[in-house]
Image (tube, rainbow, N blue to C red):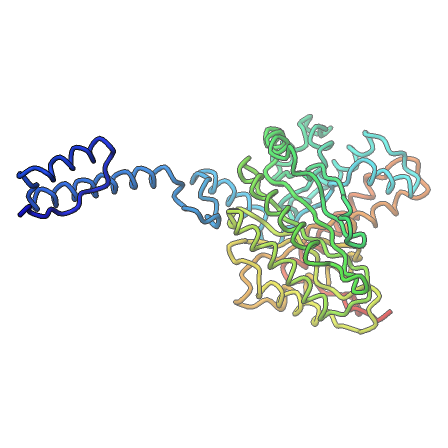
Length: 421
């Protein structure tokens, strides 16, 4: 009788022929030898698997890797910029309007829209005495990156850095109406963003800011899931690209004050938008500790027929953050979004006054119109920019903003309350 042998590991056609011959012979392979061969084949397979695994990124197939593609030095640089911008009592001056937008503001008050007027005006915003006491950062239009301070002769990013104001930029973006979404829009600008970020970094910028405007219109069902997801996915991709090029991404979901929706609706929709945004950022592998938020304050629509106190508005804003804002992100800087300086300051102040141990973030300002529109009013009836008067008023405005960022502002009357229209 032939002795039965244990099956061997999978073989090639050549070895199969050879084993068949062995099986037919009177010399069977001892069971111990077979086991040794099987162990050898198993060890080889394990070794191959180890080599394959070592070639796979350390975070495996899951994209939620928290910036694992960044070096420790890159992460440290991003965190340092976030910490600088998130200083208590300081905020961001947003002067990133394009030549056309700021030009219309000039022309509305009788000032000619020239590059020199734009340059001189921006210099006043940066170099007003004590401005750096209340400002940690400035968002610039790409045009401003290549203009110089007449004081130091340096390009503005370097001049700002010298006085402790972190320079950043708004990449060129275009608005695109999503088909079939009742006028809802998405921003276009991801193509070539990496190359532009590389250019901005070389020019001295340390962060960038991308705004995604959204309107609440209950009659048309906006914002729809498609509107929200499209905009938030783009913000996440923008953030990922920025960090790869060494810039801190400020993500800005901007829900407009337009509409007649109540505060409860505003809370639900803002919560949906921000939760989708942060999940998208995590799914993309964005390093959250190296990112910042610029968002609208949660308010009812301007035409809402219900009254709300400034304290009710403050609590609503904190509710949204407590439910979805990652504590890994150190600061949120609110945009003004059409609010007056008095209302924006009163609401920011109330939010900070209502903060508890559950709210670890720095909550401050990143204002444009609230600070700048009163300055333009000083230009009426003048042929040239009254830079000295504008600077004096601007300094007072920054002092108000800084106090509100610390919860130390005293509002006048009912400033900050929503009054039914």
